[in-house]
Image (tube, rainbow, N blue to C red; front, side, top):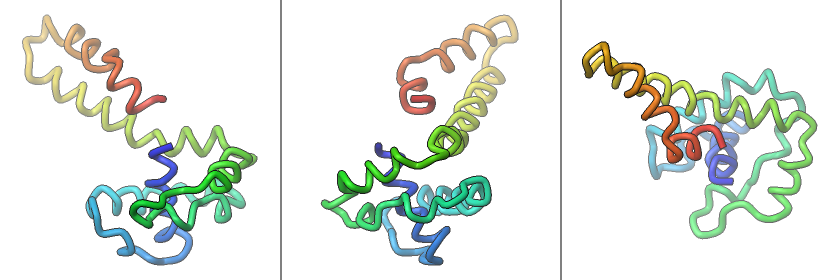
Amino acid sequence: FDAYQIYSRAAEAAYHNKWFGFTSQFLIQELHNVWLLLIRPLLPDSAGIWSSSASTLGVGATRADYERFLAYEHLYRLIFLMKLPYVVADLACAWVLTRLVDPSRRVAVAAFWLLNPLVIFSSAI
């Protein structure tokens, strides 16, 4: 549910035009803000699913926020789109890593990166 809190903060920019409300991890948060703004047309009636307290340090999202999010009609599309930048970044990392090694070892290096349980957990789950 960490991604939910990140995107709830991004919703402040995408839905309420508050681009600089969360200053911790500024660059990463702005990337999420822009991404949510771009995918917003693919998420009908999604303005009400985000937490208004996620950007409050020490508070975070409430149980009611999570329930509203999990009841969203297009939840699977939303989760796919939320995770897509992470998967693309992991594929880009794998590509860069394969360029750093001998061509005969590229498949092994890509597999080592992409099948690493930590990478799978952080990106795809």
